[in-house]
Image 1 (cartoon, rainbow, N blue to C red):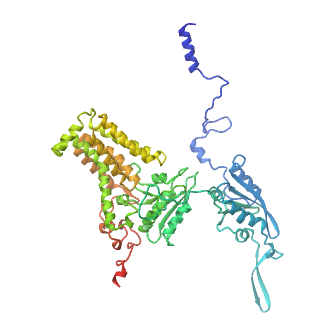
Image 2 (image 1 turned 135 degrees about the vertical axis):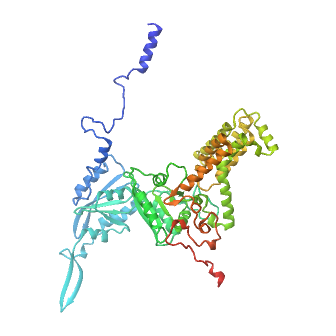
Image 3 (image 1 turned 30 degrees about the vertical axis):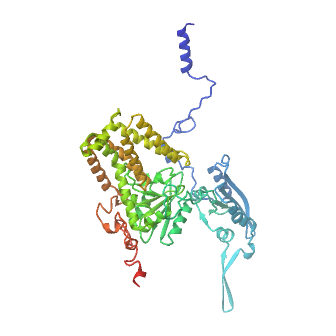
Length: 574
């Protein structure tokens, strides 16, 4: 066999089909006809998805038990518990069973308040022999008249046998299974066409801790957690008012994620509340896992990077916006809540502003506004001046810039993009690595990379200063998502400055301002109260002294416009 034949055999052995005895696994399509099932399209499968679903609970316990075993795949599901037992009522025994998920319930509550109450307590002696209960007795002309009520097992169990504080009767399997999936236990009793949904949740959860991303010096140090009831209780602790309404809506055909819509009934605009509920309740999706997903599904303009809904992990910030007439949406399983509507001034404000004197808060707001312009425009202005408008620089500074770039072989656009992308990579790496070494990587990486780039004559020293100032300014923006939006938009202004200088940047600013003024968040203009102009004195950018904050933002059209009396410091005038 010559060399050519050997090479041909080697190639064939590589690309030939595998041996018949070799294990080969492929995924079959659920829409193909396998000989046993009729081929169906995805739309037909979705339409026939619930063809074997049973709506109402049966009076027969055995039928209910078999249906539960089928729905929860009891033969292969290891964490589903079905506890069969016998309960006694009126000297009669009834078969029953509990359905629960191991790890989702509090075992002590199940044993003490459910099983022990049903299996060990016997109150049969409180009824007469005819199984009728005396509910009223009156004497008229020496004749005793008794009104009796027939024994009701359904009411007897819920009112007399179950001491748990939250017991709900459900008549459909859908509602019953939703309760089990959320950590409740279900009680099925023979002869009853209902089930008892008993709240015995007890799964492990993270405790209330200090917020990680919205750190303040002066103010509350509590943050939201993943449990929705803990989050609503944090709001209730701050807002001690019965007008705080918390409505629950389930989102997701499969996940059935619970979302709570919170608002002040006596303050929030009814149309705003109705719009939020309409958008949240009309989502045809299978799963919803986080508030970030919900934010993308309900905001007005998804094509823009501008955030139109506020996201926060601070209960005090959420409570403040509730008092102002906004709506808060809490998603189970996520520590970030959504606040709507949002305006431009909301993304510049910090929760700490209300805890500081108005002079300090306004000074901080000015710094944040300057940081926005630096983050957005400084690299683009540097490129425009270097390429088009050198005459704007003082002569000494111009000579210094030219001398620093004398040995750099790359154009200015390549330098600035290289360093900006490198800085973003360092920032992203600092976020993804474990927290103890994350800040260290950011600082050391920036120093080493910058010094090495300058020493190798890849970039100029002045460019390192520009990139560093831009990065520091971006950290001064309170809202992470708005800062992210500015960081992305910055690259657009760099290209405009490189193409057309100041003229290109001016055109970009006009387009950007037009977009900002055209966006609405749940019917409220994003640039309110400046575009359109409303009562700026009461709801503007700068904070008034605490005793002069008499009005709520007028662009929200709240039911109550006044937030405090005209004379709030009455002690001063007595």
